[in-house]
Amino acid sequence: MANKILNLDFLKNPILPPIIYGRVGDNGLQTVTINITRGDEMVDLTGGTLTFEGEPAGGKVKVFDSDNISSTTEGLKRGTFNYTFPSKAFSVEGTYERAYFSFQKGEKRDTTNGFKIIVQGTADIDAEEAETIITEYNRLIEKLNKAYQDALKKITIDYDSVISKIEEITTEIVQIKAQIVEMIDNAEKRIDEVAKDTENSITTIGKTVTEAINQALEELRNADFYTQAESDSRFINKITSEKGLLVFKNMEVKTQDWNTITTSGIYTVYEATGENRPNGSSIYGRLFVYVDNATLTQQYVASGKMFLRTRQGSPAEWTNWKEVAFEEERYIYKKSGLDEVESAYKTAFGEETNILLIREGDKVDAYLRVNVVDVAKLKTALVPIFVIPEGFKIDDSLRGGFWNVALTTVQYTFPQGNYGALYEYGSKGIRFGSDRKGNHYVHGSWRTADPFPESGSLGTGTVTTFEQNKEYTINLL
Image (cartoon, rainbow, N blue to C red; front, side, top):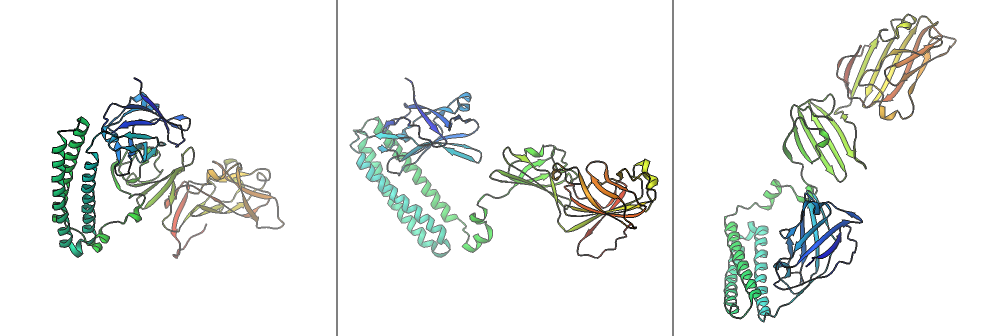
């Protein structure tokens, strides 16, 4: 006989699935085939946990069952599986308050639209009597739970009183348990196999609950409780860590591609050689990974430096690593001489020609003194005279469609002539031309995304680092 088919949807769209009928005591003989979609698309259910979740009539019983779900790898890839209803699913007569399937994979969870289950009753003449006894039993269990919670909240105030109340309730439970045992003995003579299964379940529940109560009482007597003040000083409040705590991971980052490290946590970086780590960073440090909805942030701290990047968007893409400045520092690059001037034009300039670059944050200011001694070759050419070193180059992502940065030029002698300067993106750097001899003064600025430079020699020049709000003497060229 073919199974009933339920077509369910993670978007909760109504698909009019058939009604599932059962009778109290039915067990393991009704199997349905489930097809789950998301809108009009099949979903892949591999690698996660499927669970039937239901609330039978009356709302006093909850059913959470993953054990009776079966499928194949191919079936799960198509969103298809079988579910066989166990006896606990048909334990209460009436129409289910709600019934659906859930899918959990890692930290993600989704549920289907609901479907209807109707459970019919049996001819058990002792059902009402059993319900009365079990209801009284459950009432006492609720009283025990309330007393236990009171003990946790007021343990430093009235411990002995609460323990006395718990022991009193326990005595009542023992009496009720005796009634249940007597009821089972009388019922064994006149009810069918379904009733016998119910009796066995009640006995098991009674034994389990009694054992749990005894264990809870023993643990309560032996417990070492914190006062409210001690608890506040030792534990983090749930509200302050609503999205979870950032914990240290056992995994060391060595050869891994950093693009694949996407789980929140704190990682130890040890002799790192993997791809997509920050250029110029130490191979030892700490990597902090934060995941918030669709945004993932990596923060790497090593040797007093911090690097930052994010992955976001659709499709998700990584930004470039950015080095974060801990202090307001100023980086000064100085160079003089003509060794970077195009060789055919070196004789047109004086040796006192020099450049000064000042970087604060991501802004670079350039100051040049250009001394012209022969204008014959400079009247019709913009000559490369200085190369911009790493740490001061223009940010490639900001260039857009333009190629050059215009630089302001002032010529010292009168009358004024024709002259100009610009920063050409790429290897050519600063270019200059003029039809007048003498000193020319050039200034311009741009933004950079380069890593901060180190103090010392850089290319054919020198870098000096200064902290702001301190006094320094700078020997300008």
